[in-house]
Length: 443
Image (cartoon, rainbow, N blue to C red; front, side, top):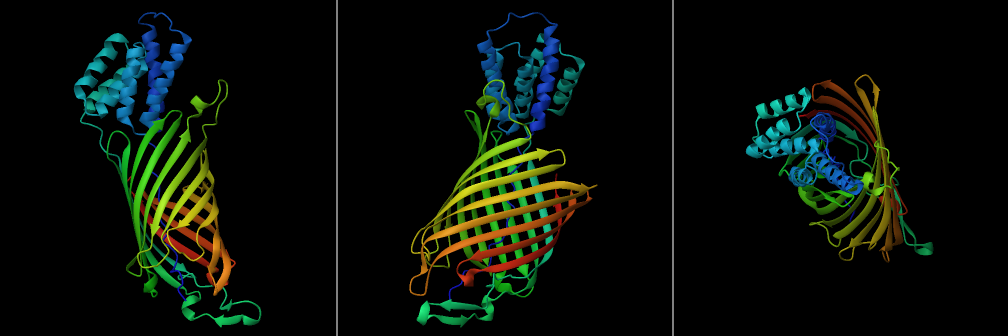
């Protein structure tokens, strides 16, 4: 019997943190101070309300670009802003700082001098200008993030062995009950795992490169050793009232030291700008973030016949951020189209997740997660042998404790339970995994 190999290795594909949103907020506060200073320098004739609204939209566009790391887009928006509204002191300051970060020292110096002469800024703003000039305008340094994890664990079902030791072929008077071989029953083992996540800015426009690697080595069941490598590119952009982050990645997975799976993925993360979308007087809570995530993937299995496929996903995700907690829920529709005569043919399904993280006590943090994924195949799995149309229902529950032990270092204890319920008994399995890890991050 050709059984699908053990479970695919788990990767923590951490999307990079959105660029320095707090800095954009800080700029708004500095702008308020500059406006106060500018107000004492002389009165200006008021502009029409429509023009002011247009200019404010342009300024908000620049602030979004700063928050998303698109410094060149921010520079262009702010350059238009200071032409349209020469008395917008905050725009002058933001433009000067952006030009300095882009390495345009002469232009930054000209703008700083103009701010000092045009707006008579208060001491707080003068200190910002002096500090920025003292630091120099050698260009913005790439933001590089690195995280390393080393762990030990135990797994009650390394090979995804069937929950039942028997299987019945055929129906009625032709039914035959077979006993599964030991290799297809649950096998327990301990394992070691190492993981590395790296990301770095490539351009001031918000292009980011990432690299993730994970390897799991079992103590005894070497044929189920797994390793995965994923390289990706991300690009931040803005399309009308939506922030968009485009993601492309290539990944490969080895099993037992041999290439098992390759994957190419294209994905977009689309977040509405509620200030622009909602009518005047309406507001969206800043603690809530809604993201729409469409995706397209091609999956290939070099050592298996008729398993290659193309998959699509459309998922909505809602994140609620509190001072000491974060809750994320998502739901999505899945479609998986077989590239050839795969057992069961095409399939469709649904995915849903719920995750919560919070501070438990002192420096101890905890995470709880639940996910469910269902698949419904379009044809019988193996006509004449297994005439059932396969229906899969996989649920995963996990809990994690995180304890910082030193600066940038933490210990993590994770318990994970997998329950794969199917209408074909040889594919049903359960497993529990316990893992203790040490993690280091560079920032």
